[in-house]
Image (tube, rainbow over all chains, first blue to last red):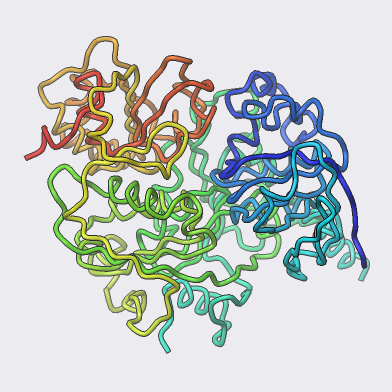
Length: 175
Length: 417
């Protein structure tokens, strides 16, 4: 199954922690106090709220984040990838990802692609193409990306971990 | 061929006797825990996934510590949903507001040596102080674990950290981990198991080991394991023979070996905005402070409270100093009270909070543009505790006490003999 998509780049720095991602301390985050638990869409305006206040209001479906090393470090909060997903982001490209964020993002259906050259291959606003389990294309050049482990690819293709287990449990009930 | 500690623990837990570093195993956690930031999310996902019954209610702990006291309307929802879930599922291990989760897990026998323990929290690596493989996951993964009793884990490569030499006066576990973080950086142990050995590691008391394993997460570590010894056995009321297998094999393959002579260490501070940018505290001596915090899962155990009390006995912090102190648990509160430390700190001007996460997770004690704080926490990220310009330095409980006393960053070695 070939998965290919293109999107507009949002460029971020290195060591972007999950406090930065969830907009801790931002004006937008202060407004979240009454948003119901589990409502990621209701939280989207606070995404990167202090670090890139222009992100939440302007991120569009299909956009792509390109960042420096160690993306998603710090707290385990799954709100971080959930809010990024609610903003429409389909993939994040970076030299490396923090491990809990990696698991959480894939479990929320976001493609995480390790590319050592990521910070140098494109600029904010460029269009980048992702060919999952093949390569990324930026500035007319192709860059290698690793294979996503099979067990995790299945989860993303099903739409995330909730959908994955839902299918398994529904199948059990039908038996 | 020897095995690393993380290999030993995951092989034994999964039963995959031929597994080695780099292989994915299916672990069956010995215990799991979630807390009051994620309770409702975990429960909702569990039922959304179509699960009805938790796989083993006796392997589930609900430790409600982040939002105690509550900080918003949704804190109460998380707590109430937690109690309802526990009732529906027959979960008896419920703890509300009487301790920080990462401390209570080992205090109460929920994070024993050699176990695999999974928690919806990054600092789960703390339990490695007691040779327990603790690691963090998100709320979706926890929901899946509750339904199946299983979690896939890749056996990570390991970095051996050999600690030798005598600990100098006024230099503590916190200073060591801040130094290690400044050397290997925020991704220096990404996806790895840090494994601690050497005379200086064994010289540490259990609380100090937990401090180091706690902050090892900030280098990206998947696990942070101290070799088990007699102190571990005594803490857990076991015979050493039962946990002897949790030693570092001489012929195990380590990706890297780091050597530290602790006698060369000095008091360290992580400087505002990052945890891996530590420099000697003396670089910042004299920096005026508006707030000092002793608390968090990193440094609020009995040894930290004792260290602070010894420095502040018979003295008083300046009247403007917001000196917030909270201990790791009610067990620590009681011990500290019996030993007179609470009285000493109250008389010195400490403002006591609940034995919970308090200001560390940014829920209370939030600061403004011009605030400068020294805290014993494990994080000082942008916006977490205040505004874009709030400054939070991270250091030991002793550095915090000495600095609170003088209203500015102070070398604790001046007060320790």
